[in-house]
Image (tube, rainbow, N blue to C red):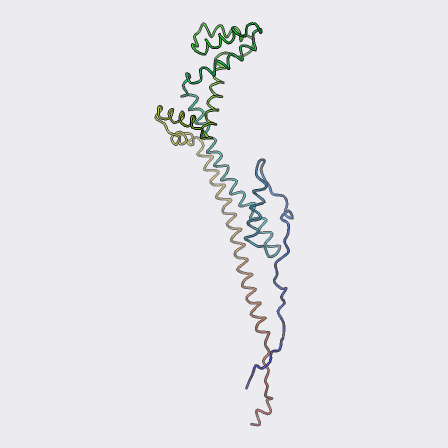
Length: 275
């Protein structure tokens, strides 16, 4: 008869055989490769979140983490750049639209003030009133004879009424776009009215503008997909390594548990045979 009456520790599990590796600073693998203007704090936050999730157990996990974080940041970078490209093209198209459709009567007085400032810089102080009057007359009429008088004042300045007007229209459309983006009520109302009058919409304007950059968008999408694939591969390797480590630990625990007990026969063999 075999009885297990006493425990005999044949070998004990090493409680320190599987422990978490000491936390290592990610700077061990170099500084993050950030582009000018990218948020270092955002990168550090991403690293901290991923580290908290992965919980690296040793230097191998640290190496995977050092690869994983830049890969994820690269994915976010491509997505952000695509968004910036779309937004930039949309705003550029809106500025061009407003510059073409913006009613001159709406900014006639402002153009007169701008032109007066320029003319006053090219006449004597006692002719300041004359410059303001001439600028007002030119802005309201834009007739050839008035424009000629302004051109005489501007002679030698390498500029013309036409150049001043074009720059003013560009600046004004840019200002209106900025106010529209900030959702200022007056700007939103004015832009919507211009869209309605032209039979256009913001979506239509953006669609027409994006046709010119579809190749760039497609390239960014491909680069994003490549970055996502590399990130996913890194995640897969981490997961596969965790499964392997888990199986190794289970085998180790099983071996330890089996070694904890030694079978002891309490009745000697000769005595058992005599019976």
